[in-house]
Amino acid sequence: MGSTGGDGAGENGSTGVGRRALVKRSAALGLVSVPAMSFLSACASGGGDDDSGENEGTASKSNPFGVKKGSKLDVVIFKGGYGDDYAKAWEAAFKKKWGVTSVHTGTQEITGKLQPRFNAGNPPDIVDDSGAQQIPIDVLHRNGQLLDLAEVLDAPSVDDPGTKVRDTLIPGTLDAGMQEGKVVALNYIYTVWGLWYSGKLFEEKGWEAPRTWDEFLAVCKDAKAQGIGGLAHQGKYPYYINVAIMDLIAKKGGLDAMKAIDNLDPKAFVGSDAATEAVEAVYEVVEKGYLMPGTNGLTHTESQTRWNQYKAAFVTSGSWLENEQLKTVPADFDMKFLPMPLLPDSALPFEAIRAGSGEPFIIPSKARNLPAAKEFMRMMLSKEWSTVFAKEANSLTILKDGVDPDVRLRPGTQSTVEASRAAGDNTFRFLYTEWYSEMGTAIENASNELMAKRIQPKEWLKRAQAAVDKQAKDPSSRKNRRD
Image (cartoon, rainbow, N blue to C red; front, side):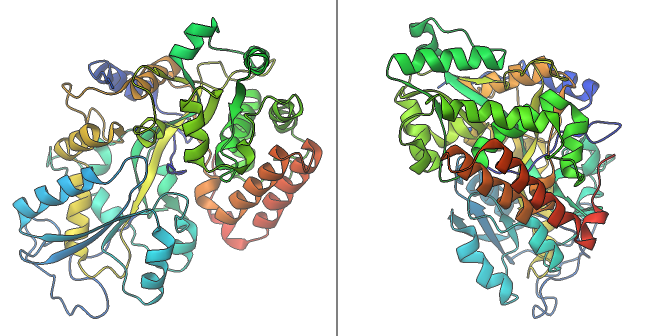
């Protein structure tokens, strides 16, 4: 499962990647073709309460955080859709440059393995806090367990010492890691979310990629008539169906409808025409029997694997999907990304996509080797390490023009590059999933009930609004707001 973090904020606001930045990036990405998909700052001295400066080196222009040769770095990586080979390559490069040995852990059990360590005051030095068992960033922040990353972001770039790290990043991609005005997580991967389909299956069936919701339903109807599911829903992880619901809300109602949810508006759901039409549209898939049979009881990978077996026409996901399914997708599947089709009279165009940063990396405030952790993160935002990631994980990072043009992406990821180019500055990104994890879970639970036909759209709206209203009563909520 991929990360739910990310943002597509623009140069002059928090609602879309700036056109100039994206056009420039797209030009670079046009050179990239693909074949066969956090954290905080502190002083340079020391880390956890008990290290007594044992990891404190001498800071200099070339060593801004004072990395100490011979020290050790504790690295934990979510081993999901992107694997962890890229991190092992980073760690080898880090050891060669700094003489720091990494203790590497690749796992999907982030909460199970790390919550006890956080509770004991003995966390790792740097963590890719993602996946189904992610420890919510807002919870870690409220507990004072995350570093403010300002020092890393204001440090000189590895590639251009005259430029701050933050100025080398795609505009808006830091927003998803913000809590109460501070960047406490670095969402590293440039991600898009939407629908996916098989180019091979569509060509065989004579289906056109739908641009409207009615056209989407027509494909689902024809698929059902031929014994194929319309939509493969990852039933055990309703985060995924919310990609469809929330994308439809944003595209139907525009950026104001999106902001109403992030800003905990009393009419974010109940009283919102966009939300009403979106949830009713998704429920129509359930009512008409267009869901892939058995999909409500499946995990994300189980459902996606059946989709790879041509048992469904569509699946919702983020751009980690191709990497996650490498072992099951047929070589000629021709994976394709599709922006969410439009409801009638939508405010945003068909090309508009949810896009921004995902996969949050964090540096715990009690990390024992803070100097090395901060330097490791700074090097993550170098062209060398960004290119390593693209090669190993088949995905793009938040670093502007950060991938060597010789890197070749797989078909699905390449289709997201093309979709980003077509979208221009018509991008959007919800932030409530990062700001308010409890609210996000409540909405996902309501979606699970909806897809299982245990509640109707009206009840879904009531439950989603109740989650918003409950969160709005928390005084800390006033510190997060989108303009």
